[in-house]
Length: 152
Image (cartoon, helix red, strand yellow):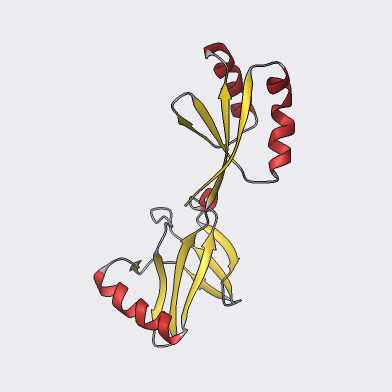
């Protein structure tokens, strides 16, 4: 297992972009996919696209992000890609309902973001779990589930 404890740079940086492009054409560019919800983690074990076991152990002041280069040498490179995020869009029927929906999501420790009057809940498990947990609010007419969205 390869362990990475530092970030070399970013794939978009001019000094990395050209070399990574060449490595990609040579078939020696490997990628490790990280869930957006895991970007704040400092330690994790993953499997790269090429099937290599990868351990990441970063210092506290270093954060992962899209395009981070973990390795680049004569044998190839390893770049971090962030998986697309799935969101469940909820529309509360009024201000009081919005407070209830927000309170409910907070009690369940769900990741949320706001888009005008809608609440978007970060989907980290099966969609049915979220729908079941929201069913009382939906059945009471306090919210409408508008559906799932994917963001890169």
